[in-house]
Length: 247
Image (cartoon, rainbow, N blue to C red; front, side, top):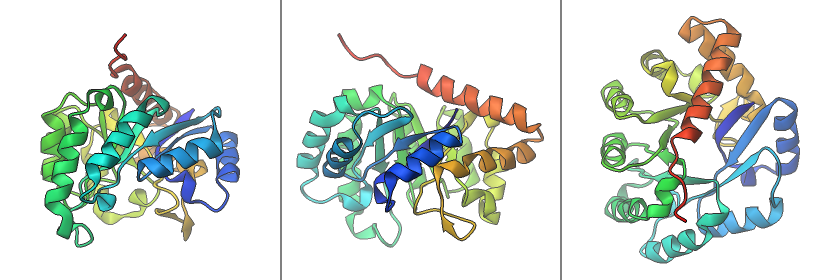
């Protein structure tokens, strides 16, 4: 099974149909959320289903002066989550005004011990160096989602043991081409960022991931089966790195 490590399943008009298509394509889904309230609603709507892993997040563009209240709620709901995400930093034009507040919230999130026992899918747009630096100072299993920063910072992240997730939009981007050739295959997992990322002129779906794996096979100079085996191995190693819950 392939794993879509970053999908906004709650944003699709028909999430159940998307999940059924994913199952038919052999893809499991990490359903990220942008705040604890949306996580709670999604958990209620989906319940426990095979092939879906719920992520609880606080998107950097949703960080406000009330972030401590949001993080308290995140902590209370965390036992019901399989992943943490979407979280991180965004210093692009959209997030520049809340840069200091985002840094405070990200620091507070990474200080929650239970957060560090789960895989984290991390947003870093315009803040790649700050995000990577902070993650490498923390004992965390983190995946850099749709990374768009410099090759130098990516290499620093690889050296520190961080992961990168690749989506259908990235394999069609000339800008991302150099990154995909730089990151060692052992550090790559898959994502869609659907429905925000596009694929063939429409919102990306988890069922699109086999095509992403096939593209990576070409980048890596491997047969398709070998590339799929590498990605499956990466997914297993990612899960194996997690710290157990305290008794």
